[in-house]
Image (cartoon, rainbow, N blue to C red; front, side, top):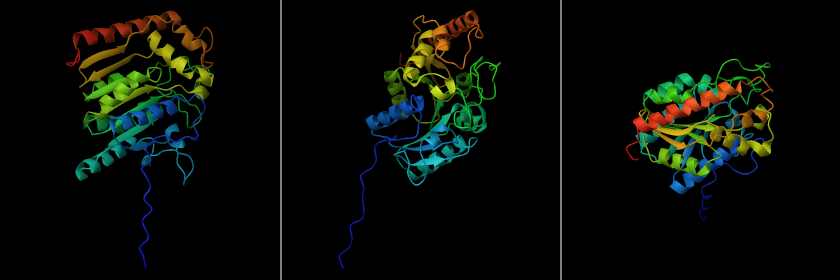
Length: 301
């Protein structure tokens, strides 16, 4: 009896497949697409580790999935720990490819912060990407410590009193090889930074500003414009840090008034954001980053 040829299928090179369950205007969809393209251009592959955030809902219902790469679902608290284990096994076995943790701000700034810090301190060989939509998008739209002051959420109906946590300062304090902020409004910068992260070893942290029309109460078609305004006004600085010590500012704000950012989102109400204070904070933050980049430049500059 003749042997039956095995069912060998070509590898799926699409990280995020069409027909996924993401909302219209979701920045995460754009971010995943950019990540997939960067992996293809680098000729690299990956295993995704995703906690209980919107990113795992993207996969859809078993037995189908919108992800074209091996994907591991974890609890909110254990994403970085799980990714550390997968990365260690890969390294021990000499297996190719990247281990990439894809997590929202709730699983990064809050519930997953302990294991994130531990993995960074050990300099685990993985890439951790936080798509920061400034809200718990998968569990009902509650506030996180990434939610900006004044934003209305399910748990802050009158506006959040506290400001946004500076997660980049926390991560750079770990002296990890590479940390960078990304904006999907600047795709060339995103591609370059993912390429840089893919070329390095050790713990790499990428923070991506990700619009969420549902949580931000904005129109889907203005998602990219909103994050563009955030960068142009200095609300979301775009920069990178090597070894926790060398800085480079990638995009200089053009003087856009941050008022434009707040006006296009119904999570903020008129008159409740002190724009004078906001403008001052944005300007001072950019001055500090530019000073750091001047005093402690990256050796490659």
